[in-house]
Amino acid sequence: MNKKEKQVAQRRINFLKRVITVQELYQKHYVEGLPTTVIWRKHIEPIHHISLQSLREYLSIAAKSELSKIINNQS
Image 1 (cartoon, one colour):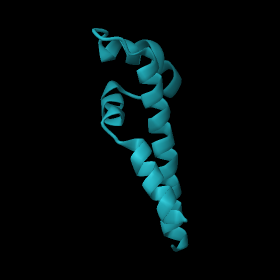
Image 2 (cartoon, one colour):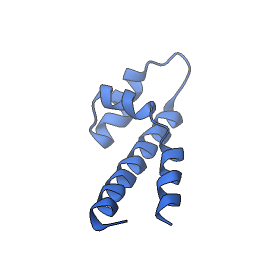
Image 3 (cartoon, helix red, strand yellow):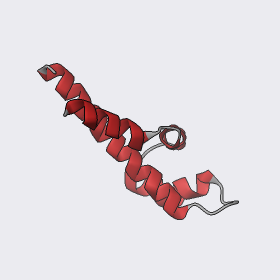
Image 4 (cartoon, helix red, strand yellow):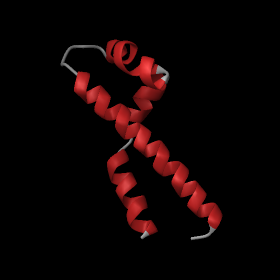
């Protein structure tokens, strides 16, 4: 892996770690029937400063499996 590829991989790793943090925070506050907008407004946006659309995109990413694949490929 050359220097540029390592930088790209490290950027992706940092992004995926952030996604995992947001996903875990969302799951911590998730209650059936509670709208995603409420969880975003009260718990996620004040800490991570992301839009509602970004939250929805983050929730659709299989971040843990992608992160483990990247880490395994670096070894």
